[in-house]
Amino acid sequence: MKRNFLKTCLTVLCGGLLGLSTSSAQQYQANWASIDSRPIPNWFEDAKFGIFIHWGLFSVPAWGPTAKNNVGIYDRYSEWYWQTLTNSKRPGYASTLAFHEKAFGKDFKYQDFAKGFTCEMYDPSDWANIFENAGAKYVVLTSKHHEGYTLWPSAQAWNWNAVDLNPHRDIAGDLTKAVKGKGLRMGFYYSLYEWFNPLYKKDVDTYVTAHMIPQMKDLVTRYTPDILWTDGEWDHPSEKWKSTEFLAWLYNDSPSKAEVVVNDRWGKETRSKHGGIYTTEYDLVHDANSSSMEIAHPWEECRGIGSSFGYNRNENLEDYSSSKQLIDILIDKVARGGNLLLNVGPTADGRIPVIMQQRLADIGKWLKINGDAIYGTRKWEKSPKVTPETKVFFTKKNKDLYVLLTQWKNTPVTIEGVSGGTVSMLGYNGAIKVQKKGNILTITPPALTPDVNPSEYAWVFKISGAL
Image 1 (cartoon, rainbow, N blue to C red):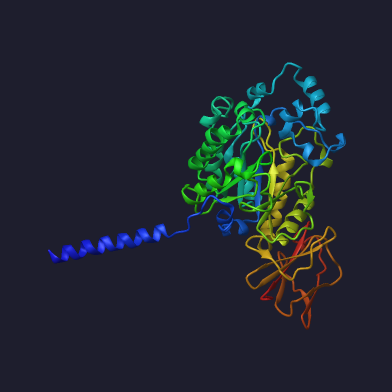
Image 2 (tube, one colour; image 1 turned 135 degrees about the vertical axis):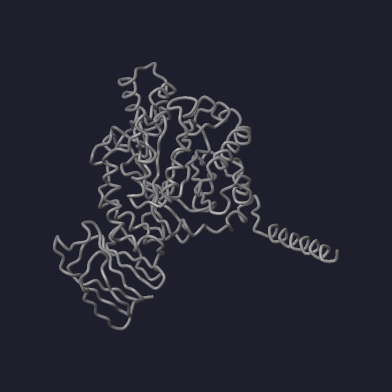
């Protein structure tokens, strides 16, 4: 009797202590001071390289103005087709309207493109293989762009989603399963606003509470994403979008609460100020050039392989970045403490264009040799300021320093602030000539021949034990 009574007391006491532990865990409040206090999960800063996917009804016309149409970068996005087609104030309006009438006819409505979003070539396992072989560590799919059409069976987008209409598939769910099956992180882009949603145009408050927030919660609850990448925030301040209320739920109560990463696009005042990671886009923050910015906060550059996010049939080879340019971009962002989210734009039938596959394969080949200088690294605090002219970059990991050359040097590379360490070249088995003098270390690059050259794009020296 006494033993049972003691056991009961211990059970109650332990249960009480467990309850105290749970209730004392960090609970985030619906204000920016509290939301911004949440640390960025470490996995994101370790990952460095992710794949963006812009796919939707805009992939059917797959057309946008390009540099030859004399428009700026923000006006080259094919995913803005519907808006550009109907807004005479947009720089690409005339060329888009002319193309549309020629290709589809004056009476062809944007909604009719749903018939052409067939996705018969879509194989999420193939996509996941491509992303894994590219060396990417996470994937972000457009669950819903500004057109409002969703790639999952959203109740708030009844008869305007990929299950109710063509292709009658849960695209988001299928890709999530394939990507996570490869051990990669999976996330979603989500547009807060919808250009032509009647409720949004008539009553933003009701749109937010009855449409947007339930839709985002459904997306998170269904798929437990590792990333929620919002956009379309610029019409209203975050208070109007009820952003902090939603983020408090996401961080406290959602199935993704432990490791989810969000960005900074939660209101017209929040970019580079509030939320999670900071974002740049084709090296822009709104209209400010970020190419030489010092960004202390965890951040990410997003861009397409071409000059559009959605697939653009109007682009030519000169609109695409070369493999070397993309690897140089990755190095630049990582050396400055950021990540690269590189976009692919699939076709309406579900193919990743071969030129995009080729670029990703080249990046993956380079990362297999040099990934030690990318994954899990951080910015070296003694690194010289990066400028557009920089050709020698630095990253660090634990006690090791990495020296990344985006242009081969036949002359010695001098590094200040390092007095010791063992030098090797990733992918190269030969000895490296090194000279040490005070806090200066000088590396003489080896003479490379085609049979021993580890890379055709960029080269990495590792200084083990330098820090």
